[in-house]
Amino acid sequence: MTDTQYVYQELVATRRSIRKFTSRPVGRVALERLLEAACRAPSAHNRQPWRFVVLEDVDLRERLITAMSEPFGVDLAQDGLPPAEIERIVARGRDRMLGAAAVIMLFLTMEDMDHYDDDFRQAAEHAMAVQSVALAGGQLLMAAHAEGLGACWVCSPLFTPAIVRQILDLPSGWEAQGMIALGHPDELGRERERMSLNEVVKWR
Image (cartoon, rainbow, N blue to C red; front, side, top):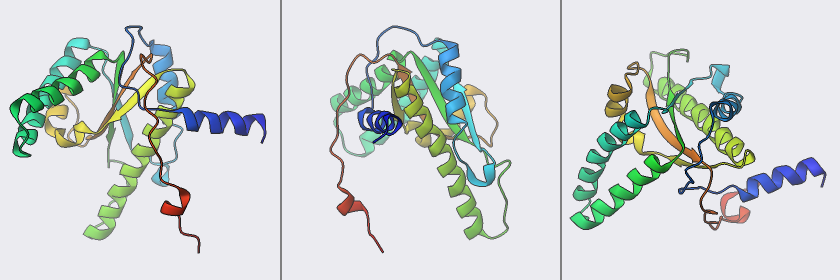
């Protein structure tokens, strides 16, 4: 194994989802490097359907997270969770987002993607855009790890797209896909068991 291969394997093997951060800030230059790495991801037709919002305004971030937490609590109540457990879960998620040094929101836009009259092909085109944004987010996570930062992808914006667009004053065509909490890690993160190749791969 070459030195380059070793570094790559080590980087992939040691990345963890980090949910606790120190108070040390992440500077604009570092954030721009991560966003540049994200924008180097492959995308369908090279249309680059990703869009990002970096939540620098702490008050705005708190307003957004608070607004998103309300319907989350309603959903948990509909699932039958007791009020004390709902409060604990909502507060935990809220604290994670507010405790991060930075939060990057990920969106997709179909503006430059192909458009079809039939629903089947249009649904496939939309899926291609989703995949493209996910690839960009994955590269951002790996770039953050390479920088010595911790990060965690959170999918909650999928459940509150209208709230996200309204509070952030975004175009109607921006579809929320997720948010990435970033910062200098204050924990190692948990190593989670992975399924073996025999469980997930078929050779033909």
